[in-house]
Image 1 (cartoon, rainbow, N blue to C red):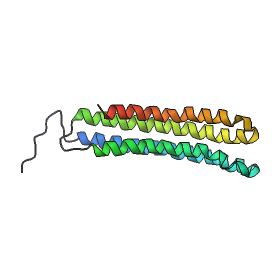
Image 2 (image 1 turned 135 degrees about the horizontal axis):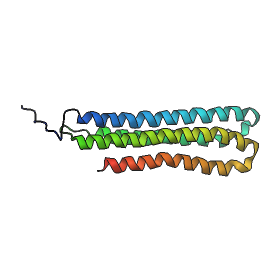
Image 3 (image 1 turned 60 degrees about the vertical axis):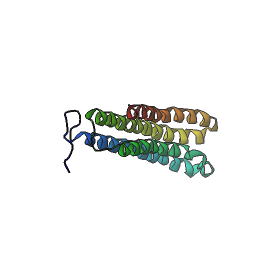
Image 4 (image 1 turned 90 degrees about the vertical axis):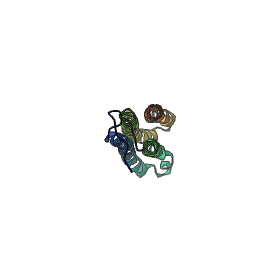
Length: 158
């Protein structure tokens, strides 16, 4: 059987960019989620020495950081599932951009969640009235990753 002839629009390496996009999506968003989890956990650990009854209330930043990794996983699975034999360079570059959009924004969101989570957990243990404000700040940090997910889905669907 003869292989289809590739053109300039469908080079052999085009699918590499889709795979690279999937890798960027999961790696960068997971790095952000891991950093956010670790940083917030440091705050929870130090807060729980004096206020062990607040541990379950303080777990919110850790859960929010974990959600960031799910954004990257969704896009990585979508990108990996879109691989086909003739693959255009345009589609490959779009998928690389989609992976980078969700990955880098997820990494930024994870870093923000970790920093806010650590400081927020400690502050809300000292002053319980700060809890709602900290949750709002964490939501604004989380939505940064959601913006990347929306852009990645838009790029993927082009």
